[in-house]
Image (cartoon, rainbow, N blue to C red):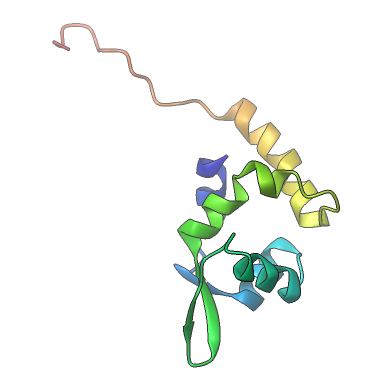
Length: 103
């Protein structure tokens, strides 16, 4: 799932404001702030704005805790469904050794 979110958020900046994360996920700024207060998401503050590292956000989105949210947003449900389709179509890189090459 991590690879899916990395591709999905590739165009996003490395630091996302709480508002950006709320807009991306469909969860409220208050909910995102609660995740920060509870230590589930780490943030930094600059000029009175909290920012979340994109890589850490992706890590959290891949947790069982995030997946176990009972009242999922439309975005959350949509991306779970898209991920399932993406997972079936994604092929991992071949690890086989080409003929004539030494391992």
